[in-house]
Image (cartoon, rainbow, N blue to C red; front, side, top):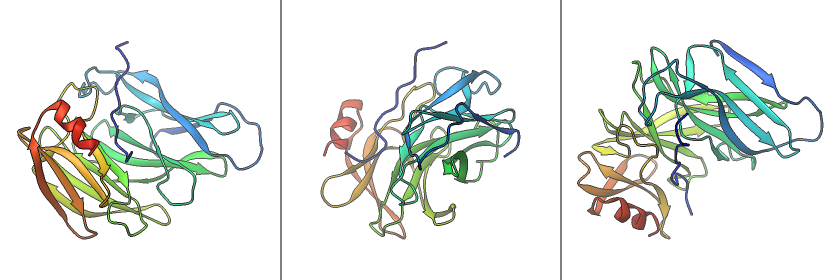
Amino acid sequence: MSAPRRLLRLLPKGVGLTLALLAASQGAAQEIVSARFDGPTTRYPHGVLGDEIEYDTLVARLSDGREIAVRWAEGIVFEDLSPRRVDVDGDGAPELVVVESHETRGARLAVWGLVDGALVQLAATPHIGTRFRWLAPVAIADLDGDGAVELAYVDRPHLAKVLRVWRYAAGGRLTEVASLAGLTNHRIGWDYIAGGVRDCGQGPEMVLADADWSDIAAVRFDGTSLTRRILGPYGAEALERALDC
């Protein structure tokens, strides 16, 4: 197996699905304290993250020490670096945000959480629509200050290069609220995602590269639309400095 993939900072400073409880003890309400992927598989040989190994299982460790897991028995894999643990629905307990890819319909962004002690999918964006089409997460944050969390990703960072923002609503509904073309955050074969989100005192900004990797762009969401400004020439170190304001 190849070396573990690297996950850069992305947060501010069904079919064939089987559920497996790895421990079944009962107790008080629990929270997810950590998560990981397991069940390496080569059934979806895309290789966009540097190798052809993806994962069929999502494992969550709970605050009482138990682990619970879900496994895609067929059709879908977790084509991702690591689960992102963040409170998406605003209830004070974290959920998990992951990239899932379908064997014929490509990638989608999905939110998993605890419901009655089980790990279940709460919401998901539509699949891109074609096999071997991927998306790279950028931010999971309240980008416009209205109290609701937005989930942002670059749709096909090697092809379409479109930043898309979705808002999470009560009941597990994701609605696309804005998009902006000409941005990217990943090159084919990278085992990491470039850029992320920062807050330099005036609200969150997403930090990415422009479509041809010549400049670093900061993008803001005002609740309706996305606006970008150029921070300077692109470079890996310059991008890291930009994330630190």
